Amino acid sequence: MKNLKPIHWQTYEYEPKERTSDWFWAVGIIAAGVAVTAIIFNNVLFGIVTILAGFILSLYAARPPETIDVVVDEIGIRIGQTLYPYRTLESYWLEEHQKIPKMLLKSKRLMMPYIAVILEPEEVETDDIHGYLSRHLPEVFHKESVFEKLLEHLGF
Image (cartoon, rainbow, N blue to C red):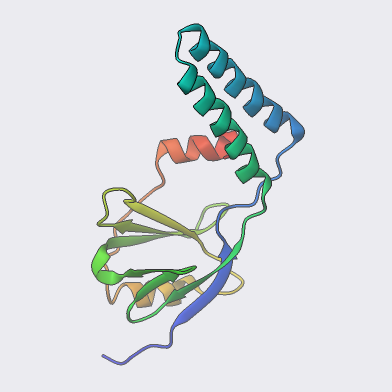
C-alpha cells in the first residue's frame, strides 16, 4: 500500500451565523426568567449559575468562528490542534448533498461520540477524502442528531 499525499484544507470551527440583537435579548430574557424562577423556589445558586451561563453563552455567540486547519493523513485526522488517530475512530460518513457539506466521524469516546467537520468543496475533493478514509475506516451512514439540528435552527 503506497503512502498518499496528506489532504489539507481550512474551514471554520462552526458555521458562521449572523445574530441580531433580538437573539441576544431572547437569551437574556430566558436566562433572567429561569433565574427569577429559581430564586422564587429558594434555589439562589441555580439562579446565579443561570445568569452566568446566559452571559457566557452570549459572549461565545458574539465571537466569530476561528479558521482551523484540517489534515487527513496516514496517522489520523487532525482538526485544529487535536489529532484523532484512526484507532480512536469507528467509522465515517461524508454529507455531501447538504447546504453545508460535512465530514461526520464516529469516535470511540463516550463523551464525544460524533465529530463534525465542515468540508470546503472549493479546497478539497470529497472523492479524495473518501479514498483516503476508506483505507482506514468503514463508511457507515451517520447523521447529525435531532438535538443538534434543533440547536442549529435556534441559532446556536
